[in-house]
Structure formats: C-alpha cells, structure tokens
Amino acid sequence: MAKTVQTASGKIEALQQESRAEIKSIADPDALEEFRVKWLGRKGILTDVLRSVSKAPPEERAALGKAANQVKATLLEEIEAKKIEFDANKGKVKHATATSAASFSTTATATVDFSLPGRVPPRGHLHLITQVTDEIVDIFSELGYQVATGPDIETEYYNFDSLNTPQDHPARDSHDTFYVKPGDVLRTHTSPLQMRVMEKVKPPVAVIAPGRVYRVDYDASHSPMFFQIEGLLVDEGVTFADLKGTLHHFIHKLFGKDVKLRFRPHFFPFTEPSAEVDILWTAKDRNTGETKSQWLEILGCGMVHPEVFRSAGYDYERYSGFAFGLGIDRIAMVKHSIPNIHYLFENDLRFLEQF
Ligand code: DAH
Image 1 (tube, helix red, strand yellow):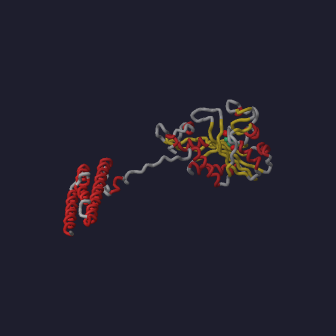
Image 2 (spheres, helix red, strand yellow):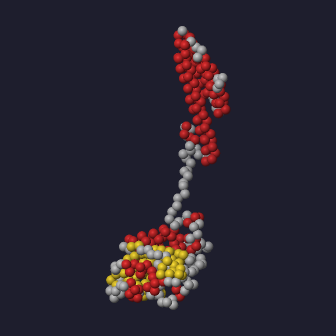
Image 3 (cartoon, rainbow, N blue to C red):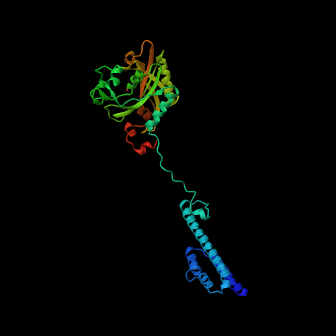
C-alpha cells in the first residue's frame, strides 16, 4: 500500500521537477501561456493527475491530492512571477527609449516609474494689484497706520465739497466723473476717505485707504476703473518734513533704497502746500533693450488744507497733517514694466501668471 503511494507521489514529484525545468527556459509571454495550457489547462498534465486522484484507493487520496495541489500552487506562483518579470521588462524598454535613463528597477513594482516628474496641479495666486496693495499696506502698517475702507458710490459732498473742491472745478464735469444720480458719483479718488475717517475719530489719526476709483477716461495708461491708495496722518505739530520723511521711507521700501525721488510743487484743492512726487526709475526699454532712467510721477501729496479740517470739525489751529494719494496700477506698471494698464484687468491668465 505504502509503496503505491510512494510511486504515485514519486510521479508527482517527477512532474514537479519537469515543469520547473521547463518554466525556467520560458522567455516570452506566448510561451508562458502555452506552458500554462500544457500543464494546467483543461486537458493539462497536472489537471489529469488531479482528476485521477479521485480514482486512487481511498487511503491514498488525501496524500495524493495534497501533493498534486501543492505542485499546482507552486506552478501558478511561478507563472505569476514570470508574468511580472515580463511586464517589468516591457516597462524597462519603454522607459529606456523614452528617456534613455540608465538604471531601472526590475522588481515587481517597476511598472510604476518613480523617476517620472510628478504632475503639478495648477495653482492660483493673488492678482498683481492685490499683491502690490498688500505690499504698500504692509509698509504703512509697520509705521502704525490703520486700514480704512469706504463705498465706491460716494456723495458729491465726500468726493468734492468736503475736500474744498470748488463748484466749478473741471473734475466735477460729467466728462470726467460718472454720475450715478444727481448728488451721487462713482468716487473719482480715495480722498473722500480722509473726511469719512476724520468725522469718526479724533486725532491722532494715521490711516491708509485702498480701493477702486472711477473716471471717464480710456487709453493705454488710463482705465475707467483703477485703484488708488490714500494716506492721512493728523496730529499736533505735523510738518512737511514728516511728509517727506514718510514718503522717502515708503518709496525706498517699495522700489529699493537707491531710487531717487523729487517733490514738485503742484496744486490740489484739499492740500496746501501740495506736491507731486516723481521717482528716477531705471528700466530696460522693451523695444531697444537699452536701459534708461526717467522721472516718473507716482503720487500726489500735501499738507491737509485748513478748510478740510474745518469740514471735519477739527481744530485747525491745533492740528496739522499730511495726505497723499497714489495709483496702485501705476505702481504695478512701473515696477513690472507693464506697457498697458488694460492688461491688468483683462484677466488673461497668460499675463497674470507671470506675477
Ligand atoms: N486725490 C488725488 C488724485 O486723485 C491724489 C491726491 C493728491 C491725494 C494729493 C491726496 C493728496 O491725499 O494730498 O489725483
């Protein structure tokens, strides 16, 4: 009895050795499939053996079945290992022709090419105008200024009257100002914030007020909507020297400490004396590539007019102050050599992504 088992299991062992030797020499997926059919297919050698187990004497069945199933399991494992090996090699060939990289892993995980650069998901960022606004606000925040905001639709009182603008001032003309309805305008500057702030708080005052402003204007350097930032500082004993010192600090922080600036006498109804500030800016000419320096006007400023203090209910004998206003778009354009203001508002990502 034992002898039969020995013979039967001996046969199984022989089959195992034979199949193992055979699979070792298999070099391509087609041959592997042939091999699988030959051994494990419906009429396969091992399938036959497994079938014959049921015909063996009952006392031998268990041992035979176990041995045959073990061979089958081993064969399946080896077939699987070969498949993975073939797949990996496929990856290797593809990879090598694509990038001619020298080293490549041939382990089971090699079909995932870890050397490929990852896919970077697109990522948004703040609009250039917002970036420049934040930069300016940060500079003044460090000096103790607080941020104030006000409405885009403003009364003529805040936009003009309270700022000492005469009734016949050309800026009031409908050719320059958008009238929403009689008495209400789209604010033409951020200066109304001066009055709105002073009405609410007593000196000392140090505020910075960014926002949209509107004017009837359209060309390469003017847009009907653009951005300004207003500054106001009021206290006892504030002088023009404080204004100059503050703006020097600001400009040097924003444009670099080598930038020269000059104060040019000017006129604004709400400041006296008033000035415009120019910076000596050096940039590469887009067309010729030459670097050239030129004076560029970047802001208006002055000492707050006593009439403005009177409208605010401030004692103009006791307090003095300075104010300034600048175009954020203009600053952005100068800093980044942007030739046309409309690029900032067309929302073309090819442009915006550069900043
Ligand atoms: N509001 C002026 C404008 O829109 C700019 C300006 C000039 C603001 C002088 C000021 C200032 O506060 O003092 O052109």
